[in-house]
Image (cartoon, rainbow, N blue to C red):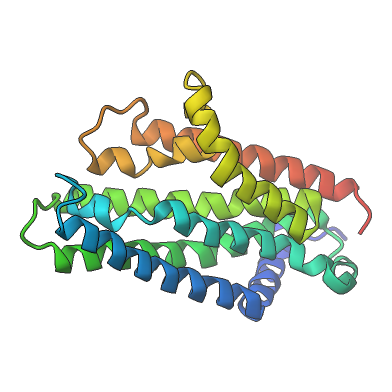
Amino acid sequence: MSVSSSKKITPILSAELGKLVTLPWIWFTLTGAFIVNLVLAVAFTSIGQQGAAGTQRMVDTGLASMGYLQAGFIILGILTTCSEYTGGRIRTTLTVTPWRGFQLSAKHLALAIIAIPAAFIMVASGVLYAFVMMRDTKVIEMNTLIKTLVGATGYLTMTSLLSAAIGALIRRTTPVLVILLGYYFVVSPLARNYLPGIKHVFPDTAGYYMYRSLSSDEMNVLTPMQGTGISMLWTLIFIIFSVVLYRKQDA
């Protein structure tokens, strides 16, 4: 007798979420990212208070660490899918859960469940610190502030999901880490300078507009919804591709 999809996904999701919350490196990564983000928030806020940031708004100062904070969520995504290949634990997983497509999809969903609140707390903490220390500067409207925090949270979450999907494709932690960090911190910045015509279709550049255009006076090429759509498309493409290939690969 075939098992319904709902009866498959619920226990699989519970199992995947249980594995993630008991994986020490997940919490080491999140704790480290939180601490580093606060340190950077203090540094950028101090610069803003000294006037080196010009007329930059309080929210922009609080989000100035986003470029570095994304590294923590890249690592989070990689660990989510690559950790099971260490020591051959993936064979046990597939023996207990033979439905590969459901299993990998549930793993991404479990990652999102962890990444969303973690991203929101980190983003909000940086903005809150900037708000407390820069109360006398121009303050953004509450409605715009909420949209900005949601956009930044969404960007970090999709970054972790995209990294997890690529991790599922390559299945080795170090190569995936080198590829993704190399892309986000070397290739993409260079491409933005030398390929200005297509830079806005890159997942990280499009994701920038999910939150930055809401709090900045600069001329924007993409709206927040367009940036969200492009980033989501990249993420879905890699997740679908990873699930299809995962079903055909040997453990």
